[in-house]
Length: 62
Figure 1 (cartoon, helix red, strand yellow):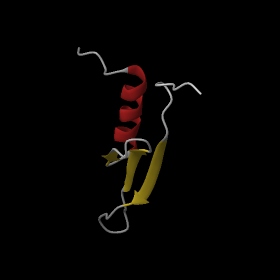
Figure 2 (figure 1 turned 60 degrees about the vertical axis):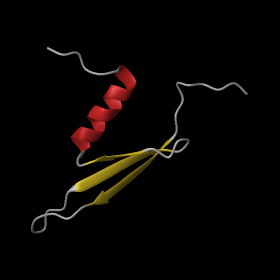
Figure 3 (figure 1 turned 90 degrees about the vertical axis):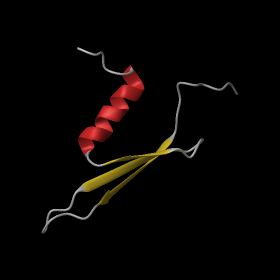
Figure 4 (figure 1 turned 135 degrees about the vertical axis):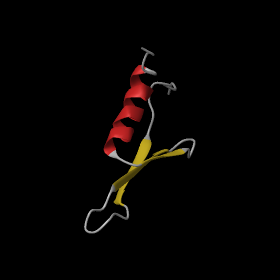
């Protein structure tokens, strides 16, 4: 079986963090199952930006 470096497996964890009043923030973490490297995110926007950077590379500076 050949190894494919473009293929990765991650575990996504999603939970509600502490929020003000009844508002609870969504928190996320993504863990590479091979390396056990975990990256945390404070919200969905940060998570999506991270995924896009992993797929497309860093955004060009303007």
